[in-house]
Image (cartoon, rainbow, N blue to C red; front, top):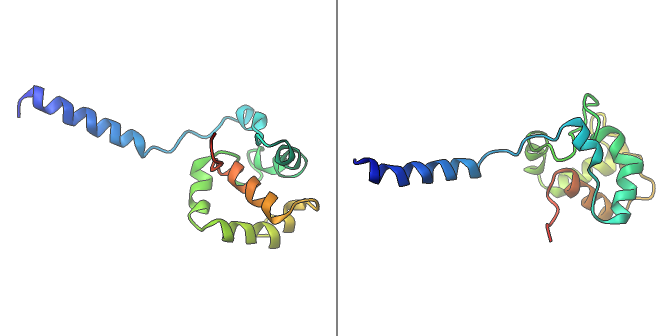
Length: 119
């Protein structure tokens, strides 16, 4: 195969492999600055979730860390919601958020897993 014919295939392969890459995990500083765009969810996140989900070493999946969240996301939102409401491993029941509704939890899960709908 001539170089002229091989180059487009090489570029296509590189482009396709880039599509499957997991985004890099945020640094601790970046994780500390992240918050949901919705003011209501942002307040809930800052007062409950952030203490564990933006702090490395707590055992909680870090906010926007696809390597940690993607396997959990594959379980489905209902499983994740059940884990939050009932507690799971070190996750306390309700995530210590007495003011959260199931809709709030889903919004917070989507934010932390970086699965929010982008405008």
